[in-house]
Length: 152
Image 1 (cartoon, helix red, strand yellow):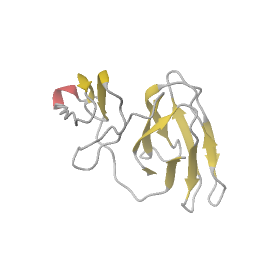
Image 2 (cartoon, rainbow, N blue to C red):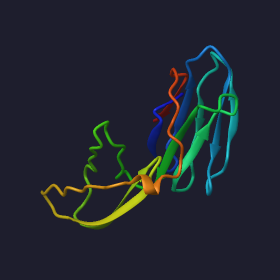
Image 3 (cartoon, helix red, strand yellow):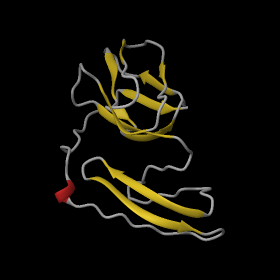
């Protein structure tokens, strides 16, 4: 499987794909606005490095040879993004004071947005709620790690 399964990456930041497995894989992006890539990677081959040129939520990444292998990249234009911890917590560090619309995207349950006003020197708690009625993807399969997706 791809590790991490969900990640944020900035526009033009390097995505380094490393194959730590003993078999051939490929990394196939499924963007809507960025350029698609589909590159094979043999066992022991060096890292493949790619970038995304435009912001885009939920770029699917799959291995055409192993259909259970998939990941999601969320390409953003600023450094104010986070992937939740296992308990669902997140923190947007360094967000300047102001009014914002914050969007949370769940792999299975879709997106949820909230408006928030950030004040200097104060934490601003947010709680996002998702429901099964929003469901749009099947649950992920579990297998052993094979490829590493590492934003640099």
